[in-house]
Amino acid sequence: MTTAQLARSGGVRPMLLDGDGIMLSALLSRPDGAPRATIVALHGAGMSAGYFDGQAAAEVSLLTLGARVGYTVLAVDRPGYGHSSARLPEGQSLDAQVRSLRAALTGFGAEQDTGAGIFLLAHSFGGMLALRMADGGFGSARLLGLDISGCGQRHARRLFQLGDPRRRSLRGWGPPRLYPPATFRTSATIVAPTPTVELAEAARWPVVFPRVAARVTVPVRFTFAEHEALWRHDPDTLRDLTARFTSAPSVAVERQLGTGHNISLSWAARSYHLRALGFLEQCLRTDGTTPGTDADRVRAMRPTTPEL
Image 1: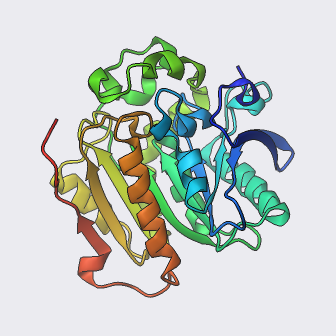
Image 2: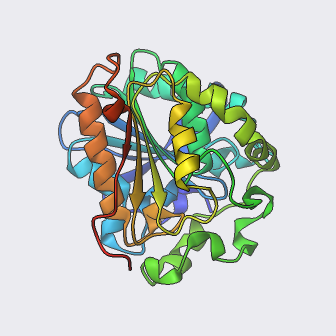
Image 3: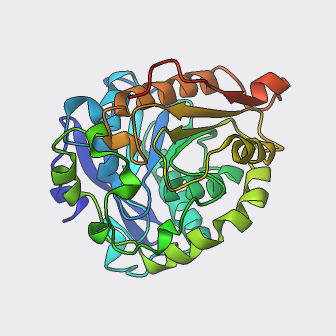
């Protein structure tokens, strides 16, 4: 099933982007009037752009929420997914994905009003791509910041050797009660086989991460789910993770209670998306070049609600 054929929320429309000769499918939601900025959402391995427009409950969709508060939201099927899957059945390396996505977003910005700039909101493998894209531009659109969930520095298990997500158990998702009841039925239309090139790229990530993080020069926020089982997020690991961002003006690490790995499909989706939008508001109010204090650079939020 292609992005164009998926069930979509009102106001969300499919489109194609030219990724340097590779046509990428995407979902677009625009606000009434000029956008304040543009959120580019990048899905994880074995998912698709529809991850950010969950259909199991009305409050789950990032695309509708973002547009409602004044932002353009563009969720892209990464190379090897959606429209490009036939041309790239094995997928692309991270370097190649950076080139394809950068060309696609540069073209998008040349034709569409992106407001104050581009804000990358990425999940899981998409977070690896977002971090790799943080050391370059998108034509005239500047990068405002990175918001990453379900992605860290060190794997908790051999997750990227699981193959086709449609054959996986639900262990990586966390307890099923954390998701709207219809999630596992509706998500069948947004999962996809993980391209084999991505499996190799993901296995190398712990080695690649330190030098990638050192090149990030915009604010970055990580969110780890309470029931995140695919990435290590113990205090020592998180201290090491934040220390790697030697050039970023600020680094935040937060925890999202009451959810598992796929936060944007869970009951906690709206809470997470609102926090991400709050972080974007902060990015809009800074020029992204002034280093913060030590307290600003590393911020760990303690849970403020009881465990579920």
